[in-house]
Length: 226
Length: 107
Image (cartoon, rainbow over all chains, first blue to last red; front, side, top):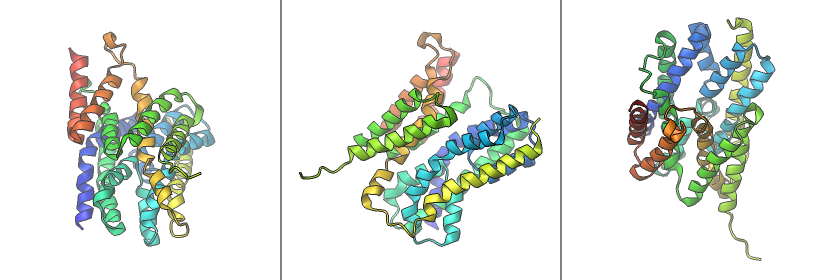
């Protein structure tokens, strides 16, 4: 139970980055004249903010379903990496636990779990921690989206609160940088994503992820005796 | 106005697709043995993915401070990274960044 609470608490600072994002999501849904049910339905079925925002934008332009689908799935392809990273922890879990954990995977709760992995002694503790952080995530996200939908983005414009989103990602990345090799990979990822930003279907993100992980693998390669 | 039928068709497909991606490797977890070397490579995932989600958005954001070519968000993000690295505090990082941006865009 304590790991569950620890997970919930570990997520609290990150809510400063989730709330502004959720408010933007809710505001854009209401500006697109979606109903509250559609907005919540999207949160439940998809539960992946960046792809939801991209989908609304493309639906407003009456883009073909297949194209929006491919774009959204490309944005969400990174979850396959998180799925891979979570799989050793979940290998002895019940099917229902696996399904729930998979559904709840997001950037934030995966990163928080990864940063705390050293304090979590067993798979059971890790999974409880993950569910605790997921509960915090899902409550904050849905509350924020509904508030944004009903009231619009009520923060004063002189305070660019949307900037808390990238700042919270900085706070998520830094604890995962265990040594210089990780710093190099993060630096490479930033530069590569900036350079490749114009590739279609968000391929820049996927290419960057693959290249950056390969760099990490190369940097940690054991020297083989010849 | 987005046609509801079009909306739901997309959302259900996107939902199924996204869940399939999330479940993919977890589904195989009890069948495939993952070596320590692979786990070591997996540990690079946050460093490889998270910066790529935000760096382009912040870098290409057109700001208002002409002196630094409207790149205030990018410059403050670099400073916030340094603050975060030394303080190891999420709250301090976010508070620093928001105040720095407020300061530079309102004076």
